[in-house]
Image 1 (cartoon, helix red, strand yellow):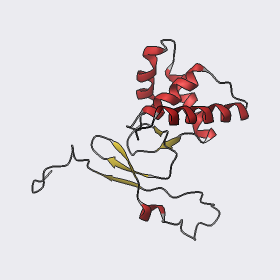
Image 2 (spheres, helix red, strand yellow):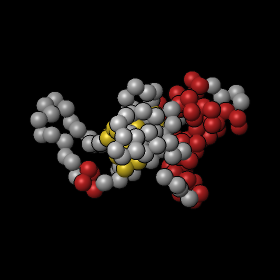
Image 3 (spheres, helix red, strand yellow):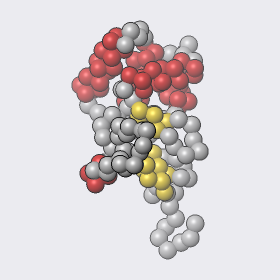
Image 4 (cartoon, helix red, strand yellow):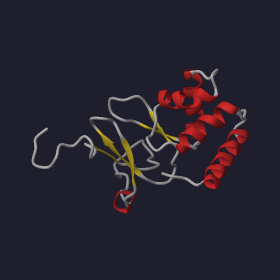
Length: 152
C-alpha cells in the first residue's frame, strides 16, 4: 500500500497518542521502526526491518526491533502475520484485508475482497469469542508459478 506523506504523519501521530495513553515512552526507535513498517509493502520480518532502520540508527539492536513490534501489536497499530515456515511478519496496514502468501518465496501481498470480508466466524466456537476472520491464501506468486502448460 503506497501511502501519502500526510497519511503517514497521521498514522504516526495515532501511534504516538496510543503509546502515551498506554504509558509507553515515545522513543526515536519506536517511531523509526513504525515508519519503516508503514513504508514497507512486503510485510517484513523483524530482521528485515532491522536491516532497513539500522543504517540511520547504528546502535539499534535486533532485540529492540522485536520488542517494539510486540508493543505496537499490543497497541493495535500493527498486526502480526503468521506465514507458514517463516519468521513472524508484520503489517502496518490495519484496514480490513486478507493476504496472498507464496509458498515458495514467501512473498506476502494484500488482498481486498468484499466476499471474504463477509465471512462470519462459525457459530460453534464454544468457549471462544471470535473478534475477526481473516483469510490467508497460499499458493505460488506469478514469479514462482510455472508457465501455463508446464509442470512444476
